[in-house]
Length: 286
Image 1 (cartoon, rainbow, N blue to C red):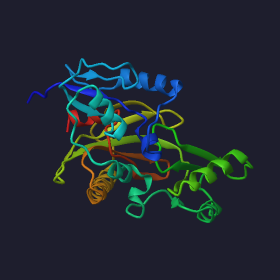
Image 2: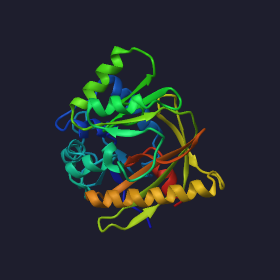
Image 3: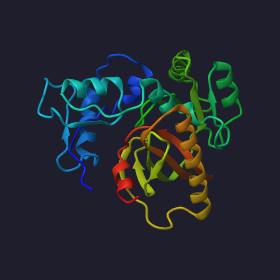
Image 4: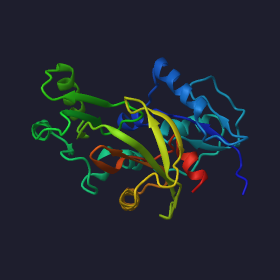
């Protein structure tokens, strides 16, 4: 079935807006980085147009169906100014809940020693247990594409890390603290959740990320990429993710990241309740 052309807002900094609701303008440096991502995305189909929300008003997409990387209030305002038809979308509160790193807290197993903490005391208690690799990775409640993260190696007296942790905890949103481990395979599974709760899932993908966790490329996974046990673990994790997203009232596109490391397999390390750079790849074969 042919889909009508859409007018896209590629607001790759959606998590920043979710973390700090209100009018926000990304820095020129960040916008330049996002422009590079926009040139590499496969989300836009033939006939689709892209709307630059920070350029002078452009009405060339007037009357088109609007679409957004993540339908935040800022993205919807940009589409409205352009005269596009607004997409049906969850509320900002639902988007915040669905993309919060604490969404899956207590639902799935993770790395040994990993914990979602909300106080300095909980943080100190967690790192005091020790990491199997001697290194820790901290992630803010809303982080993306390698941003909103901090690394710490045990024994290092680093004032920057202490300030970073305190600033993150001061928001009241908590912090994911986990051992930093060597990854040997990154995979993703994508889907779309209907307003009535029905789910459509895509095919397994393999992702390449840089040393900071930023996305580089996505390809369909070859048969046998995961072991049988890993596949079952990922399927179970997807079931829990769907339950969690339904509970907070989310509907729309989403992606789940997982990885293999030298000590095992983590079936869910990130839930992105929005489009992703690999979404079109996985869903094209789903």
